[in-house]
Length: 309
Length: 186
Image 1 (cartoon, rainbow over the protein chains, first blue to last red):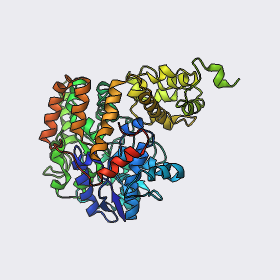
Image 2 (image 1 turned 90 degrees about the vertical axis):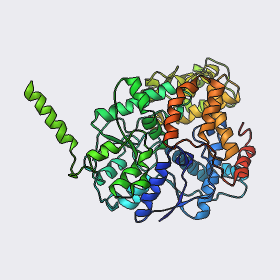
Image 3 (image 1 turned 120 degrees about the vertical axis):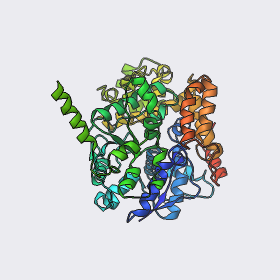
Image 4 (image 1 turned 180 degrees about the vertical axis):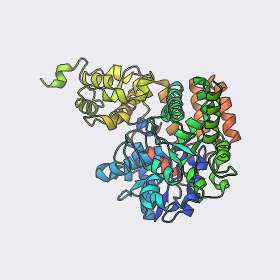
């Protein structure tokens, strides 16, 4: 199936690796063809509605109109764009008066019926199916905390449960990783307020990493550029604040898919992650034995200690 | 006398606040929203979401619109999905930010961030993060730049900092959206 692909602003800057890895994965998967929309515009993130309540819907309407012209459902990897445009599609389809008012401001595009808006995780899990992902190098030894954050599942009415989502966990298991059970999978990282209220977003993000670590994860998977930015780029700062070491690579779920599918690693942008994932790779899927060595070593060390005591 | 009138402490609600008052009138003060709110738990709010709902019911318009809470809400929707009365609390917070901006309430950081963000979108059609960061910090606290240096260096090293804005072709169309909507943009 062909999808109108809306990358969103972050995927052209801070989260380029999300964009590239997702497109590489989609090229390889049966049943997804991402066709990038021409000339898309910003969704307005959280500030748009504060400036003018109709503005996020109007900005979304132009993007939805472009997708409608393409005759396809829209896919956007950014959780904030996904929430804004998904919400606008419902509002505009239910409110003809608002749609008419907004269409009057659009020059060059007109929105008729807003197409369905989807997150790529939804497409992978519910359209392609996790069992149809061609896994060539299972991610044995990866203990992944699937971090959905806020806007992949909220507001409700999307493709997964807002309190206890499972789709990314199921995908990680299908890729051969262990899906770690943890209580912070839908907690907020504070992405929307990190510029205005940095201290609070640092507290929230540090809590997320602390819980992932406590649950025994050695990696976190995300589907949002802001979650990734805060947990990865700011990880050093979060460690300094908490006086502890998290040492947690933060992958976009598409990068982990690409690794398991055996795609060319250059396409996955792993070197763009600030907290290097290469040690984890060396200990797991790239280790000469192929088997996960890390747990074994840990156990041996522990036994020795006990013996000495 | 309606229940709403019985608990009102302030003056008659302004026209902008009326739809919000109607929404908040549904609240029976169970506090589920405050329990779900990560920002309240982290100490980032002067009033919890439950308190804001009560204050709206009581007509405490000025206190609500000058609260820190409406600006530190992270828009995570944890409150909204758990509200047993189906109040769209997160959207109420957004509407309150909008009214506070419209009515000129003092909220320098919120104003600089939100209007600055949309000013960039209006001009370029897409976000250009470096300009937002520079503009925001220059206008709020230029000393912040010192703290930003390590982060900026990491971003440059990883090629995550875009030195030039992206320019979609339909920039004039995008500007037209802002101009077409009343009071849009800046």
